[in-house]
Length: 476
Picture 1 (spheres, rainbow, N blue to C red):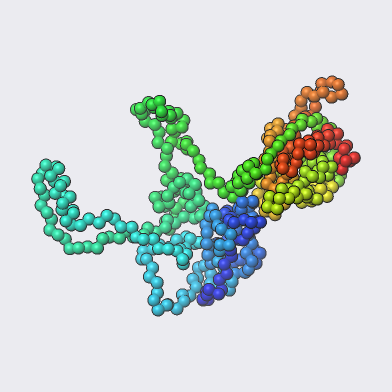
Picture 2 (picture 1 turned 120 degrees about the vertical axis):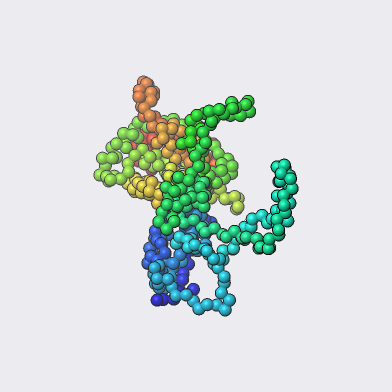
């Protein structure tokens, strides 16, 4: 049997997996106490303000403790897992106890063991025992006499004083036993685990126990009074015990960061948005032709690919729009490269990963990069690095059937292009009204950096390329 010493335990701290992050939420643990881990093995998945990231352990050993449960938000730099790097005793074989100190610390009696990973930390403060109301014998006698008088029974005999007894101290309740996902479920449903009757083995609370403890919404009684002018009537549907009146979703992770960034952008950069409606029939035909091109076989070829290329060509012709505003130094920073951001809606919220050095990529390379970006975002595996350093962004609201919108700038960028739905519409073509594929583009830009002339030139160039895609060759 091996004795585990302090020197043999390594604590893995929550790293800053992105630039300037301060916290992350533990989404899932892939290991449990007693598991053997090796250098580079992924032990958990966390969600930062930018993305979901898997964390590898940097050394070999045996997991001794998980410091936080799934669903917990932890500050960067806080130890989240303890590993015995000597590979000592297993989880089933406890390590030998150290020699007793001269004055061993007294521990409260009756404390029940808790689930693995939920042990009380050494630095935890002790809660003060709760005391019930203290009533002396004399006070009890007076209260009894008063009650007898009120009941009309005359004065009650005063009981003989009992020997003084120290006030009873309510013992601290043991922590309910439940696995991390069940604890998170209880938190989301507003259920106090202390009130739940466990049905699992060894007194463990199950998901079914939590669901059974959810209080039903009371129905309106048949004899309920009619609402007054200042009250709101409750409809039968809303009063149904099976229908929740509202759901509260914590704002954290990607959604929290996106909200803060959008508010900061909207109220920092003066936005101007311009619109243009364009005939993209030729572009749609070119997309179909490119799908048959052998150099693009197996790649993601769609209208967004040509729109992205059109934007890159417009930036090449009007480079001043590819810039940022440096408030601290009071400078305009012109970028001689384009990191093209693509706004993506994911289950965790809106993210904007970008294609590094998109200006230098050929059409096949751009198609490949777009495919990888979209696939990674859909799987929720976009890294924080992929969302840093963007210079200009495209948001494709057309996939939702929307004609267009007024997009908010991605923080630190001077322009964002919104692409509307491509629809068959009547259009004057060569002097005659014909059905044509038409879309509306919207370009929002920071008016501190981009004036109306520059913004109009960029938008007009994009529209001209999509109307006559052969300009991709002559202008690009």
